Amino acid sequence: MTGNGHDPMRPYLGRLVGKKELGTDIKLFQIELTEPAGQQHFSYYQPGQFAFVSALGVGEAPFGITSIPSQRLLEFGVAKLGSVTGALHSLEVGEMMGVRGPLGNWFPMDEVKGKNIVVLGGGIGGAPLRPVINSILEHRNDYGHLMILWAARTPSLLVFTDEYETWQSAPDTTLHLTVDKGDEQWKATGRSEGLITQLLEKVAPSPENAVTITCGPPIMIHFASLTLKKLGFSLEQMWTTLEARMHCGIGKCGRCNMGEKLVCADGPVFRQDQVAGFLESFL
Image 1 (cartoon, rainbow, N blue to C red):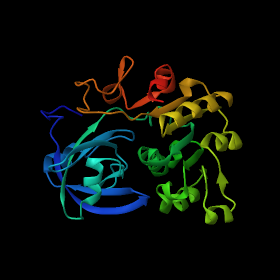
Image 2: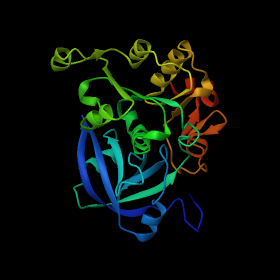
Image 3: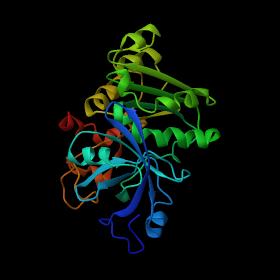
Image 4: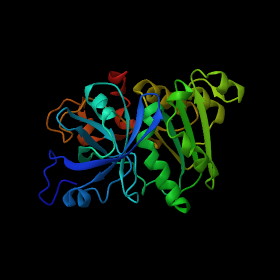
């Protein structure tokens, strides 16, 4: 992705053309790249890759790409956590911003064709998994059963709620939701309460001809992998994407090291056997 003379440290200009609420202090940003070189460079990317999004004059931060290439716009789910994300949240539709990427590796969507897929998303960690789900639904006959386990601390932090019906109605697809603590409305519907690991034990997906794809807080990834091992999954069947403090995104600054690996250059997608020994440093 860095060939053809492209400078990976150069952001492309884009216009914010859409902005909507995903959850409490979480917004979906829809960006139309305005430079032909940027449009060409982002004409093809893979589920799991990320990019740096910048509020001009403030700074940039890395986010998993939430869209898929067949969509005309680049999309990112952004939680308001600091100065850069705060500046992004304050942008109005029509304003200019920067996008640098696509960067990193991606989920092995070709390698897992024909397999049953278990997707586990926790909170804003669901954003990088949306392209996985939508890629499978776009090529539904290429994959086996799709089981989605979607969790958050509270109902207001569940992301992409307006897409659940589409996911549930897709062929050979099931969606399971849970929150750590539900409000009265949530409880009135009889929906699940508890950690995603409890939900995982309850629905107990079979490890036969299956892989898991997980994103969420490191502690969730850690305990989800332990639960999956109890269910018979090997570490080689588990894929995850990690987040870390990044500055360059291309493996030069070393800020996102995890043992001998760099999250930006060696990841952010890893097979669980590659990171199980290092993951505890993230907890």
